[in-house]
Length: 244
Ligand SMILES: O=P(O)(O)OC[C@H]1O[C@](O)(CO)[C@@H](O)[C@@H]1O
Image 1 (spheres, rainbow, N blue to C red):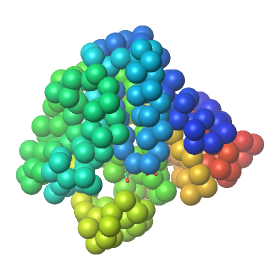
Image 2: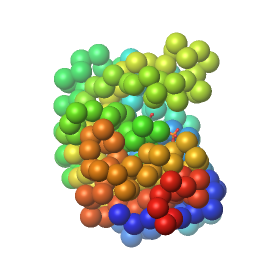
Image 3: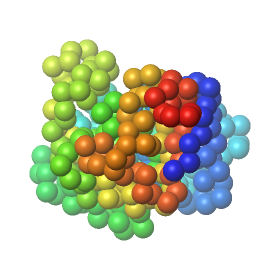
C-alpha cells in the first residue's frame, strides 16, 4: 500500500484526478471503477475542468460504479446513478451507454447481482478503481461482516452508514435500508486501486485499513493485500496512523 499525504480536500481532489487522468491518457479505453459519496466530488469537478481545457477526454472510457440503493430508480435524485450523471457523466464526452451502475430498481436480487457481475467480468474487470471509505471501514457498501464478500450482493446497511448518509436526505427515514454493491473480491480484481479519504471522521477507518489486522470487520483492510493500491489522505484522516 502506498500512502500519499495531502494538505486538504482540494489537494486530495487534484491528486486523485491526476491519477485518473494519467490512467485515461495512457489507456483511452480504460475501464474505470467509480465511487459516489462526498469524497470524489472534487476529483470529478477537476476532471470536468481538464476535459473542458482539452487535457483529457472520456470518449472511449467505460465505467462501473460500486453501488446503488435498492429500490431507487436512476432518475431519483437520491440514487447513485443520478449522482454520477449530474456530478460527472453529464459534463464530459463519455458515452452514457458505457456507464454502468447496479440497477437499484430491479427487485430481483439474484438477477440484479448476477447481471452486474457478468457485465464487470465481460469488461475484463476494472483498470482503476476509485474508492472512498466509510467511517466503519466499508468499501462500496460492503459493511463489516464475518466474511469478505465475493461478487455483487444485496446488503442491509448498518445504522452507522444510514446515519452518515442521512445528511443527503431531507428525512433520515427516507434513507434506503438496503443496497446493491460490488463485492470485495471484484474490487480486489481491479488492476489499480485508489482510496481517497479526508477528515477526522475517517481517521480510525484509515488507521484500521492501513495498519490493522486484515479482517472482514474492516472491509477496507483487505486492500493491504492488493499489489497496486494507493491511499490519498489528508493530515486529519492520517492523524491516528503511527509515524504519519
Ligand atoms: O465519501 P463519503 O460521503 O464519506 O462516503 C464514503 C463511502 O460511503 C459510501 O457513500 C457508501 O456509504 C461509499 O460509496 C463511499 O465511498
